Length: 488
Image (cartoon, rainbow, N blue to C red; front, side):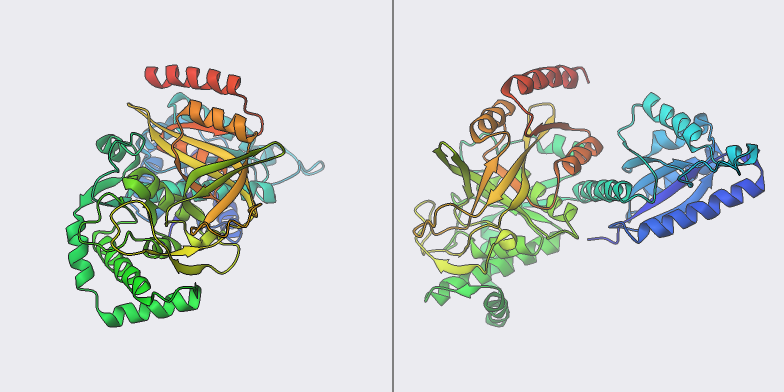
């Protein structure tokens, strides 16, 4: 992660004179300093902008500063919005309008025209808001007193979405081989995706990975084995299978780091020269923050890495997931999520076990080692990014993860069980109607609101399935959204 920060640009004008402008600057610095103590990223006061040139210059600097993840504006006084046009039109960073004021209350006895001239946020923020609406800019608007915890929480939440956008725009995905054959949802327009989301998605030969694996030393494997022993319980006598996974992990990591990639995908249909599909290797890489997509699903691989970055500072729990099977007993309706081998241990309710078992799919010469565990309970979301042909759609559903209601002693994979909103069957109908994939990112950290903010920043469609969603309301929403995006 880069040392991200956010720039605080305060609007005013020269008509008020130097004394007022000095007070505005002092208060803006105070606000930035105090807010920074409670926000996930620093808020840096940059300027009290009084002219078209000042605004254009600071926006230009923000655009070219890789550590700047977004811009937050506020108008302490009236700030004529025509002077914001050039700057806002050129802005390439996520933009939040904080509609607040320095004082919480109107001072009954002290209020006079000097006070009114200085404290015109109610006036200035509306003028400022008009020009962004006129320019049709994607933005986040947060109104309220800046010292209130609710305002700070909302601002911090938006900051994490903006960091997700920054990570997205520098995202590189390493694909080992192609997609699983004949699967539709893992396909997508990589050129349009790079144009819209910034992702560079390219392919590396599995044979190149095999060559890199061959160059991994025993000493490197020994060191990683010690990490495995410290983190997981070894519940297999097949130590060589674990060492082979360590060899795969080290090789994949070396290749990704050399190319600056934050995510990767592979498929069990292309294991040229490999004895095992990476299981433990993939799981431990995800535990370090890398994204992954099975069956060549590069979209979910990138989204996993982005949500892990957005959840930084939370409990670090966003992971590649797949809907596998349902429990349809009335009153006990649950989804069981898992994957063949590759579920990140960040969601484990207890200490994961390393086990080896036969994998009855793919071209594995030997039984792959993998982590086996139950997922923890807690509120979460599942998210799926799909290519609708001409636009991207991000689908999000609220879920409640539970301790699995069955022990499932013969299921040799990591698993998570959850209740879906608004119910299992209605949720399934809505998910299918929206075109949601069978692969998702499950996150205990990232909220639906943050994903909505991220989608707004990236200028893509967002669909939220929640407790109030019905198939009929969603059908209308999808119809109108389809019309709007085609017109756009």
